Image (tube, rainbow, N blue to C red; front, side, top):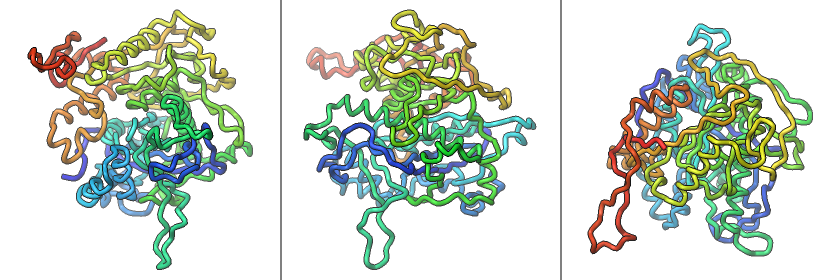
Length: 530
């Protein structure tokens, strides 16, 4: 009852949370923490000190896990609520601005029991044996959560995608948008005289009033969101670099060694060194993951903003006190954008930029909007304008290949090639070099709400009270797999479709216009192709 539902995929799924400490933590922007919010006041609001992500992947269930436990005993034993439980649920209470005692009820009864149907810290399955292809590798998809989300909030979708032969890297954004994040390498000084474990240092969700600048003023809302967006970009690029270091298992040049202080796996809220001799380590360093080309990226809400920002800007530079170089461009071919929140992005824009990826191929883009966000008229009008721009790249300053240039970011200076080495069933390619525009599709999923993309659609008890949530999340999973597998056109052809037409559920003259409930004509599972 307390486990998320299994998914009907081809492979069993493993999940491991990795943490990479930065040797030299960096403050992004000038914002500081205010006295409010339960955080340590006057510290930098955006301090980049570690990169954390949970990876979902096809699991080798016949090898020991990272900590030596037989995987068959760990089925459905990964925690959905990150540890420590009380800090996490208090973080949700802080986000919702409700008393902590309300969250304590949830923490004591439900939260510790919620589990994911995955094998924690299992070895990754060998694709060369699975496909009888000596060059086979698993393709990689990065995932970015929205406001109040966490690295496990979208686990059902991530597990569904991983179960069909993908590696999904769910970033834990530590920019104040998660309910709470825990430092895996630092503890508060409040240790017990009786020898109890030190308490982990936590950071709660940041409301606008929780952040100030040096002049004492509260952070202008969108200014701080822009700084958070840059913070998130750095996390994505550094997660890619850290994962590549693990997979390649070879030391970088001396100039690069100053970035990370190693790579660890997380159990509970503690970071542990990866054992170098067991099957887990050997499976991850055996070249089973494809990182040199055909990368996918997806994000929900503010995570959707991040996806569009990554595709419309060159890679960010590392903070100056690190190596000072620009981060390596990501070879993105597919971008899945779920209910994107556009307000943090500059207007006009965003628009595609060739320097965002490693070659001239234009990434394919699929935007899935909830009915709720499509009914947000001003926002949806802007989204339609963005999609039109991505389909018609013939206005504004352009790069030599025809893409619009954001002149506030310097161009990327490096270009690297990569080779294909995955089975054909996983081959993901965008348009051929020289294409004039990305392939951008926009659809609305009827009866979907903003939370329909997350686990709240299936988790107990919410998922049992609203069964349509499971239907919608299944459809989202179907579309995601079709998109990353280059068959989204066929998938849409098989789905029931409607033209966009609005209706009012409450149209009595006695009901004030502002309180009449609006919705689109149609039923659960139908789509509108814009």
